[in-house]
Length: 245
Image 1 (cartoon, rainbow, N blue to C red):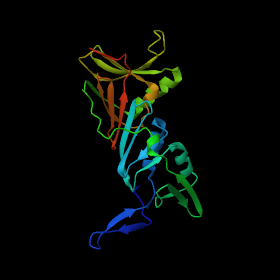
Image 2 (tube, rainbow, N blue to C red):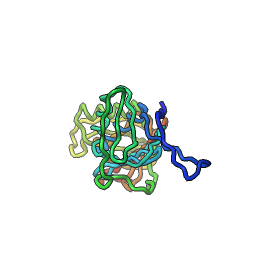
Image 3 (tube, rainbow, N blue to C red):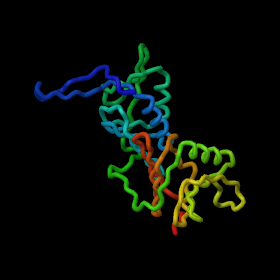
Image 4 (cartoon, rainbow, N blue to C red):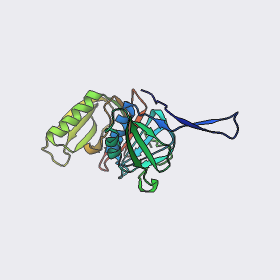
């Protein structure tokens, strides 16, 4: 689904070189799904003009970025993204009107909602500089089914930890309570390795959309989850007790 244009204004220094600024748009279902996911990482978000969405958790241990089909016309902040999305949910197919600098109008038919923007200074935002892993020590593919099984097992057994473990030539993903030697656990083999490592995550930090991901883990306590079917990447910090070698 693509952006739908309903109105625009034209400003130009000369008639020979006009600039068209789109002020009214709809958001696709894919973009709405991304925003719902991003709201679980940080309840606030600073939108930037263009096609990139980026967010970072308040603890600065999760960063997510994606490219969308729509092109946003301006920078604006939303303090409570969940509330904003629920407000859009009052409508069946709402349009967003960005003609005002202080708020966006959510409208459909005879219905109107005025939603005010937040000050950018009160929103935790990702750094402008692109994120790069300091090293790429372990790589594997994680499917939707594998991710779903791991998270379900963590919920069923009430397990707080997800570990990427390399031992005996195999790479496995393991949900467990690493502080309890007798805790229940659930594991899935995802690859092979010549190394020995134990990379630990908090299950609560695995806030990624369903999909197949290429996962790269650095021994410097940072990982990257890159979706294979769309332009979406998560950077998730490891726990300090992770080991490599």
